[in-house]
Length: 260
Image 1 (cartoon, one colour):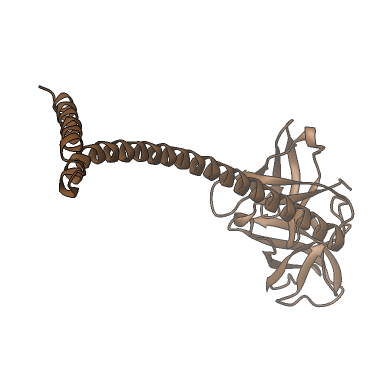
Image 2 (image 1 turned 180 degrees about the horizontal axis):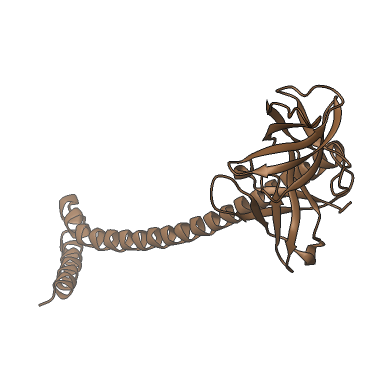
């Protein structure tokens, strides 16, 4: 006999017993009433507990689903917020370049790669001709000159940096004048050659772009003089070494200027 059927017989017997006592005894003793009520209360309690357990499980499933939905929503908001932060940084960088270097700001672009080795002579950027990028566009950041665009596809471009041995930038010394050409050197430095002095060049002087060559706006910082090389007795022009103003290895975005 199953447990459920047995419980049902017990329940019927208890009910019959209650009826007999009520008919012949009158008032049923409290002990008998409690004994009869016990199985009924037990069955009722089991049903109530089962219902509450099922409701709790359903509520827990709903809560987990809601938490998962909220987590996805928060992740989306965080990504959107990060994109807005990056866009703001890019706009701030463009504004700084426009104010301090040149009004010919065209756009900004993400640096997507560079040449191997400690000296980044070439950089790749994530915009091309579809974004208005042209060959010979000067490339810069608020800290100083990066280089110039030498190759363009529809969606990407190549930048030859100031430390590339093929780089040629007309330069002058800030506050002292003079005229010369900066050339990239292996190892990440810049050499200024054939410099005609207006005033003696000293270590710590700042070197910036000049109108010589016509490719770059005037006044963009190129770097700081590290060493002044001994003069050639037969040549009045000087040479000196320059530490680049921009750490090319940490660049994330650059600003592109209209070609001169």
